[in-house]
Length: 139
Ligand code: 5GP
Image (cartoon, rainbow, N blue to C red; front, top):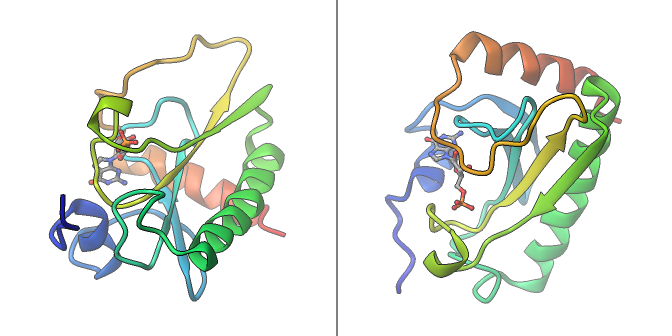
């Protein structure tokens, strides 16, 4: 399947769709997942047209990993989860629904059950407040 330039994350990168930013550098962009599996669920995407791991160049794989670590550390400090899942899906059969490579950072809280599937859009104020708390803790 060829990369579709109109996928929602490409639109977010071009500023055509709103998002709640956490961090940005030359090669990556991190922002809140709009249907979070838990509070603080963040996505890290490359500024590169790649649908999946197989299309992403090694330089961008490294850049996404670096940003993921930075943002996960900020989430850990800001939200104090009891664990953090870092995962990435390749292909519809693996559950991928947006076809621009992305890493999920999903905080886990011992006191709250994990939602396996994300189907509820979080309200903008809650996403923005969480984004602010994480951004304050970026190293
Ligand atoms: P996938 O299933 O492809 O690994 O994950 C796609 C993720 O993108 C899901 O967690 C979903 O909630 C999130 N998502 C889908 N559409 C949007 C959107 O318009 N904005 C943001 N911020 N996240 C989105």
